[in-house]
Image (tube, rainbow, N blue to C red; front, top):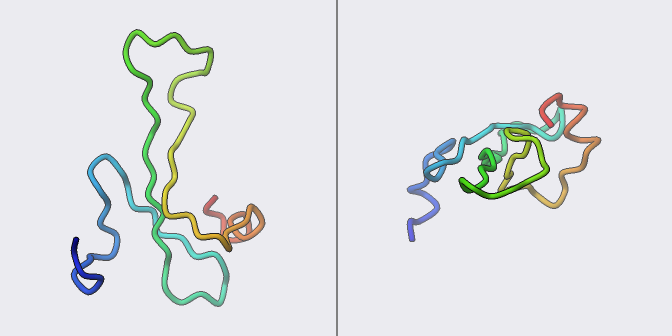
Amino acid sequence: MAAAGERVAGAAPAGYTALAVKFGARQRSPHYLLVKEHQVREGADTAHPPRRTLFVLNVPPYCSPVSGAVCGHL
């Protein structure tokens, strides 16, 4: 496991994209959400339309629909 000091801001695990967001106008540094498109296995029968679901990781507990809408990111 890497130390916190070795972590590169904006680096994301394989398959994920790092998305920088600010949850308030007074926030100086961005928070990075990790986003990945959900892909259904081949041959799986699903009623959901393809390419319409995202996995979002690293969402802080203080994030709300209102804070995301105000910043225009969520």
